[in-house]
Amino acid sequence: MELVTTREELATARAALSGTVGVVMTMGALHEGHETLLRAAREQADHVLVTIFVNPLQFGPNEDFDRYPRTLAADLEVCRRAGADVVFAPSRDEMYPEGEPRVRVNPGRLGEELEGQSRPGFFHGVLTVVLKLFQLTRADLAFFGEKDYQQLTLVRRMARDLDVPVRVVGVPTVREPDGLALSSRNRYLSEPERAAALALSAALRAGVEAAEQGRDAAGVLAAAHRAFGAGTPGAQLDYLVLTDADLEPGPVSGPARLLVAAWVGNTRLIDNMPVRLAPRS
Ligand code: PAF
Image 1 (cartoon, rainbow, N blue to C red):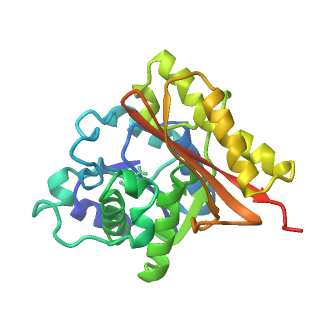
Image 2: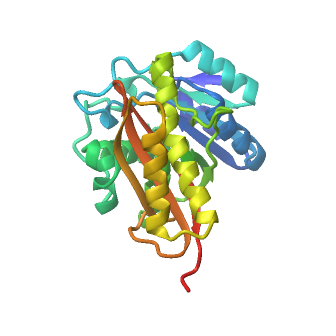
């Protein structure tokens, strides 16, 4: 496995890879969820390229950029174990040599909703760095976790709308045995906060079960809200919504997505699950 930190080194390492290249973009602090992305890339592409970069553009002024976990040595070990060929871990100056870019990708209306409403500018920052990394890595396939479902949806849309020659592959969320979705931010949680954080997955599971029992959209949402409130106190709901599979509002039947965001102490957590609503009679 080769570690590269500059564009020139990346270009040289990339040129040496023949066949298809799958990229897994990360901000480091790698966990089992990332390992699943790496395994999917290993299975579906001839070579795996991992990027590790804590992207300042996607953090708001009061967010956790400074305290975001940086664990490069451990991350490289995860990449090596998972069979990555190349890891690109650039510095901030390498990615943004002229400071913050004045031109950014506009994520459109969906970028202002859900996560975008609570975190203004977040998806401009995400899509800008993802597009830059698409250009720099020239990957054929890109693997993104369904845990960040809005990010996955917007990256797919960007690739389609802007003709980026990459196939975006969504990979299902990895969970702890008790249901908590794996996230680099889970390491901020104290023990009581971790217990409170289970409200998110409990709400989603309740919604999925309600849908399986044939409840309509309103019934699914009501069940999810009840389960969220019934958990260990300490999670403050930001949103709990049911959309269609492309995050358009108001599904009445068929494939849908239930999404939740909540604050637990100073940590903001998100989660989502697919839901199938019964056809309307
Ligand atoms: O999901 C993440 O870790 C980040 O948003 C990404 C895609 C690496 C862009 O910085």
